[in-house]
Length: 473
Image (tube, rainbow, N blue to C red; front, top):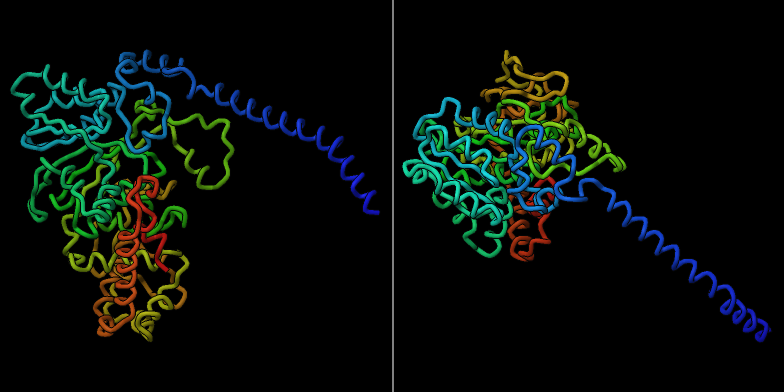
């Protein structure tokens, strides 16, 4: 019996495996060749510039722009995810018109990633106090310095150039917390400083942003009163995709995919205004060719909406923020929002009674409640986004709270009013809410102290351990 088993084993080894192994190897080689052919046929990753890019910029008399940018910028390289460049004169004129509208002559302007200088040439035709160009890519440094040198001496002495990555504030702040570096100090060196309460802003800046990491860094800067906002109230003109604009400015009717804790905090900390639409192809790099891509999730499908245009928005910190929430309570407010908007289905009374038992009766029988006469204005009903931010209102309590009322039903102003009511209850100082916040802070300090400072450890410019939406339990 044993000899028959050995003979069968030898037969299979000599005849079956010899045939099947080469066939499997050929199949793998064929699959690799097919993948290579698909990549070569991709028009975006083909020759630089592609024929489509050449035709587009020649039709708008911007054909020289393709000669003044690196070839990698024309390939839609992932390294340029956090920075984009204005590549059209018409687009630059539109942006400059909004950027310099009603601008005092002594205004300090900052252009982020000027690149080939398309927008810079339009700005220098206007009257301004000072202009700082902050560029990440050293490829553009000689051209920008040559542009500055070619200007009249009275204008060129008002312009300064800095080689740095302004849109990486979240990454810089995180790395500084690990190794106690001074990356943010170097980045902000040379920018003017102004008191928060003073009239006007310390500077105006323009940048094109395609990631939420930048806005998370702005929210954290306000929350901890650090980084950019140690200089005062900075007025920002930002070109963003429609999806990011909706995530930041939507109303509670937009649904769970958009109206999240980051949305609430952004609208509490900042005022915003929709200015105009811009052609997406007037910025480099172009978006990747998504025709052949398979849509796997609902969010991926939403990302494809409105990709032919970007939105230009004005963002400025609220001057009256500290009138509605004290500086010392900003960290409490952020934790309150993150904790209770992990799910929009969280019911208000059961959630708050975890911290302060029997507080539900106070909310149901609210003696300080007054009906709000606020009218939600400047809202695009079709997409449920605000074209202009609404002012914060004190004592904007949610109407008629009951046991089934959810946090997702409240506006940002109502959440702020509920928070101020919550922290003013006598039992708050002995509640486990403060203990939970302290445990969370200790956890974050422990993670930062034991985290590697390598670039691979960061996710989209914002570390996972620093994102409260992902870590609060």
